[in-house]
Image (cartoon, rainbow, N blue to C red; front, top):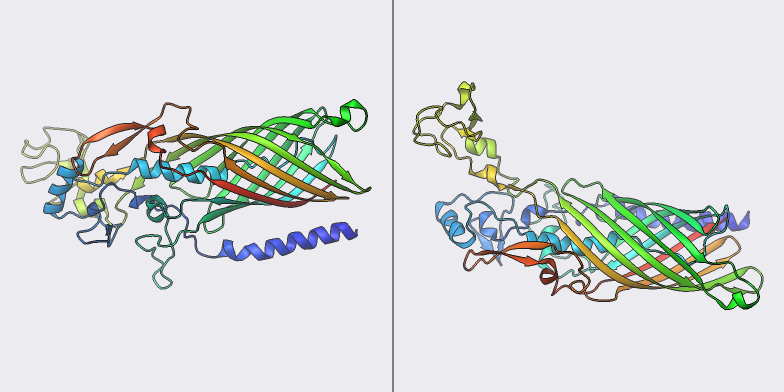
Amino acid sequence: MGIITRFAAVAAAAGAFFVPAVAAADPLNPAFERLVVDPRCHATQIVNGLPTDPGAFNDDPRTMAQLRFDTGRETCTPDHAAFKRLMNQWGIAFAPTAMHSARTVGFGGFHFSIEGAVTKIDDGARYWRLGTQGPKDPTTGASSIINDSPPSSVQVWSMKLRKAFGFGLEITGSVGFMPDTSILVGGTDIRLSLLEGFREGIGGIFPDVAAGGGVRTITGVSAFQLSVASVDVQISKPLPIADSSIITPWIGWQMVFMFADSNLIDLTPATDPVNYCNFTGINVPGNPDTTRDDKTPGPGAGQPANQVFDGQPVCAGGSPIDFNNNVVFQKARFERQRLNFGLSYQYEMVQAGFQFMTDIVDPASAQIGGGSTTVVDTQTGVTRQITDKELLEDEDRQWTIVVDIGARF
């Protein structure tokens, strides 16, 4: 009972320590409406290259004419490159940690643990500063126009339960959250220990070897969907100390696959397109409220009433242009390769572990897919496609530190 009591006390203390992070504001929640090629579409006044009001649509005719010249659009042009770079770094923070040795918990065994993972991010990157909300005004509750001080690392805290089924098969369930966001993450791992259990004789010199994989997916935000899958190989060797303690070092390789998709994003959420248009309905047959005349701006203007049925919004003295500020960012599909070094210590039922993970190669070199990204040259307005490998050429490698404490029984 003494060991169980001590473990419960440690778990309760850890939980109490991290509760404030959940209760606080969510400065790392996404703010994808800021990810535009030219911030002038948001405001007429630009300070240090940033709009003074990123939620409002700038309909100044001179600015719109310049935007059309620079980006080929009168409306906001989404910055697909910034979105995908942000997903590349966020994805590795949510990736399965493979925090285990190659040996299972044994036939019928369980391992319950609390796990914390800290991942380095490029906090100075523009996409982190623009793509996350930042602190909110305590009076109005509104987010700032930029996240001036994103953290240098992000955390993910999880509860995990490992269960072995014999013949080297083990399945893990995981559920957790990322502090400073409303994001919850859950998933499962499965692995097969290919060689384990030798204690004596010639087999006692061989290490344990396991292969497996995992998947994590997020919920709690409406702006995007993210799932991360992995495959891994681990090699470890338990080293008994006295009668009741075991130290187990391990080394492993992991391949990570990221699947990130944007939902529909309103790039000008502070401007209501319906009121901006003075919306009277959709231009379809049989709808008398959509009767056009020569004075109605937008598609079909200058045509006899109801001659052109194009399904577009009809405005009474306004403009439908802000309806074009809703976008879906291009999907992000990335791969990463990581090396991990770990060490666990077990005393009777209690087990604690530490692991360090890092990219083996830089993110660009790890790409095996054939994805591409649309980029816009703001000097010439020329749109071109670059490969995802080219997109990530300037991205740094990331590292992750993982710790856990739990009980085996």
